[in-house]
Length: 119
Image 1 (cartoon, rainbow, N blue to C red):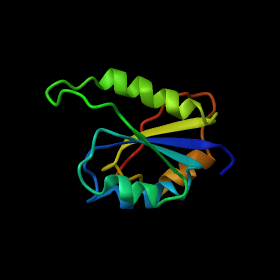
Image 2 (tube, one colour):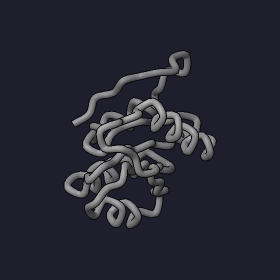
Image 3 (cartoon, rainbow, N blue to C red):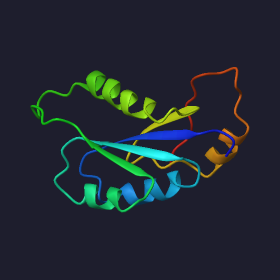
Image 4 (cartoon, rainbow, N blue to C red):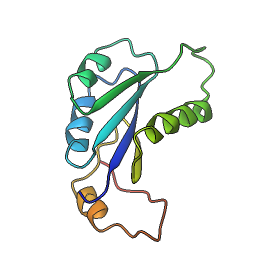
């Protein structure tokens, strides 16, 4: 990859899929910051088994109140600490297609926001 790509991965009880997503991301991301919403399964154990993953856990919150904006702001702050050329935000059950590598290799630098296909 000619760019430094840091992914932000949001999780909550994703042990059933997170390894597939991380296996895809390791093909083109320099770092993945996992921002977990208090998982009660093996999500943390699975994520920490990857060398390129940085684990962050959100503060406990009222389960009936979801402040997505605050969580996104916090995640962007964590991603910025790695000085990426590009950031890639996704949920744990969004697995990038293999064509994303070609997309980043041939990125149009005049555009600053994209939506890519996921499996």
